[in-house]
Image 1 (cartoon, rainbow, N blue to C red):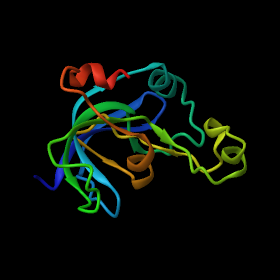
Image 2 (cartoon, rainbow, N blue to C red):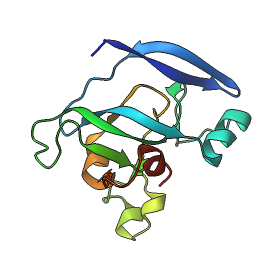
Image 3 (cartoon, one colour):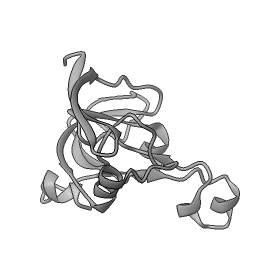
Image 4 (tube, helix red, strand yellow):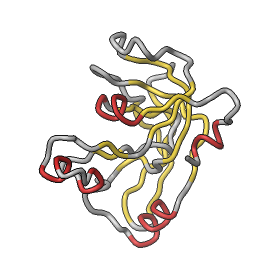
Length: 149
């Protein structure tokens, strides 16, 4: 695997640039995924066209958040996963510890993490997202279909 990859970097309103960036390295509990399909949704368009940026996204960033791909590297402690496995993940993961999570309002988590980076060759999935929001893709579902879910 190369040290760099192509990625669509978002810098601001209507400022999206294709650049060479480092391939992410993984840490404890994380996986590295080769993107096989990435889609665009209304949130992407809103952020690109109007600059709707709050705690959801920090600029500059690799853009895109709906994707599907295959694991190319992983923490060996993640025994339920393996290289080559077809996966996808939702774009956020709550902490399950804050005041809002304790009330069951996970969508209002005070320490929500967000996963951006679908418009690149590889994406690093953080440990919390691996633990709560990573899903295998069934054999009969294409990468394109999985990226839409």
